[in-house]
Image 1 (cartoon, rainbow over the protein chains, first blue to last red):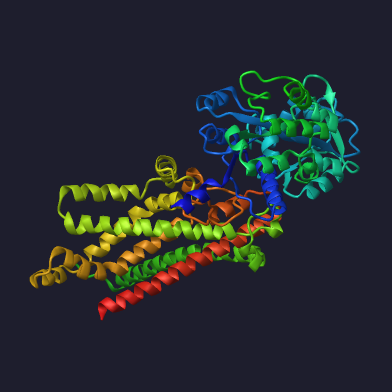
Image 2: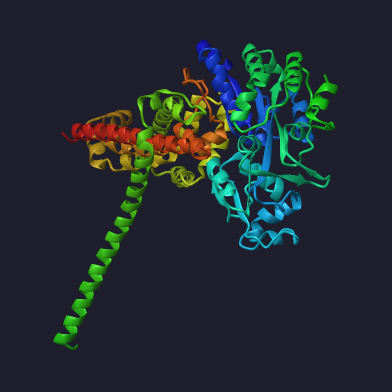
Amino acid sequence: MGLVIACGAGTTDIDGSSTVFPITEAMVEDWGESIGGSARLVIGVSGTGGGFKKFCAGDIDINNASRPIKASEEQKCAEAGIEFIELPVAIDGLTIGVNPDNDFAQCITVDELHTMWSPESEGEIKHWNQIRPEWPDQKLQLYGPGVDSGTFDYFTETINGEAQASRGDFTSSERDNVLVRGISGDRGSLGYFGYSYFVENRDILKMVAIDSGVGCIFPTDETINNGSYSPLSRPLFIYVSKESWVKQDVKDFVGYYVSYERAELLRDLGFVAFPESVHALITDRFERGLTGSIFGGENPQHGTVEEILFENQ
Amino acid sequence: MSVISQSDFQRKRARRKWMGRAFYGLCLLSVAIALGMLAVLLVYLFIQGITGISWSFLTSFASRHPDQAGIKAAILGSIYVVMVAGVTSFVLGVATALYLEEYAARSKFARIAKINIANLAGVPSIVYGILGLQIFVHSMHLGKSVLAGGFTLGLLVLPIVIVASGEAVRAVPPSLREAAYGLGATRWQVIWHMVIPQAFPGILTGVILAVSRAIGETAPLIAMGALTFVPFTPDSPLSRFTVLPIQIFNWTSRPQEGFQEAAAAGIIVLLVILLVMNAGAVILRNKFQNKSGG
């Protein structure tokens, strides 16, 4: 029985968001390889909310979260005496792209995107002038990622208010190449992808600025990092339990996870890394074991990820 | 009473024959649809997945790179969990069936219990997952372990084992029991030396069915807390685990095409394991059948 208990205790439990899962999975895999393949970290996928439920019950060590902790969840954790370290790990950013020959769509509002993509528009909205009267009577061809991707979930949730709610009559492909070729060969096309993917293909696509009520903003490293490119970019988090923080495995793994050296990996996975200075602040926050929520909870703070981190260090 | 005319007779006979042929055709069509669907599924899986099956696929852990991804942790997890489930449901199921059929056969309690057990077989499997989470993972402090998963699946398939074992026990001819009693055997001796050996092939069939169902279950294990990414094999009964259906489900929900192939390959492996288990059990059953018959 002694052996049995020892084996069960040495495992680090991670759970939570399916959006953050591919990042954490890649980190566990690569970190495991770097230490010689003996990592005892396991990952479940219960969603951000399901993960917080387990996290605040003390069942898991780390929760993957695609949004900051809610006040009600923070309260549950406090009642159970669970302290946590909140760490932003990457940014999920989406880009709207059109054909390079499209000279009228420079900027689009969030409402217009909703008109274009909502489930009710299926079979109804077929021309650009139905979106905005001054746009030409050109046939609208829509392109989007496959319905299994996190990108599709995020876009539908943000634009249509419900994950997976979308019109069905658009060209959907899991292969980004298909989307890019489709859009670059069709004058009336519009599609959305992860920002990092757009950057690789910026010569054959044209990006559209987003107006969420404060003017047109193009996605760039700067606007994504300072949060002004909204609502199509959001920071992703991991929450580490303070009790697990003392474990050497957790310390090493999370240190590896939040290091700026992983920026390349984040880009490969389709996410946006923070600037080096922000990764330094995140690493510092983790090493000092600063607990409590500054991005969510009872009183979320406003500003860029860098400002918020800097002011609370 | 009138005699049916020759022409009437021939017309009615032709109609009866036609009806007979039509019914035969309908039955054949049903068989063709059922087998056809299965064939399409198998051929599709085979075409998509066969290239994905290799030694490294069987001996690698899950990976974010589809070409490096394997099912080592999932295969072993599935086998261990199903073994625990098989033993649990076998012991509890046979004992329950013996009590209900031999000790309390005519009691009101046994009748009520049997009806409830039959109903239990229809409870949605996810309910067992929630039960397992509460009882095994939390109350008994087993954690999200192989043991907790095995017990959960054991409970899930218990009704199948009880019903099948009960039928097997009931099918043992009363004359055998009476002869044994007549020779002065005690109840325990009758059950141990007569009833169980006679009923064993039937009991084994029930356990095979139960285990075959258990190996394909996903929902209760996910509810219980089985994991998606496990980079090691279970090395103790309290170790974390994942199983083949969860691994396959995870791959099918991924955007990259390589994972679709991995999922198809995983399904083929699952089918092969199922086939091997069933074949093994059939051989065992035949062996026992011959023994008790001769």
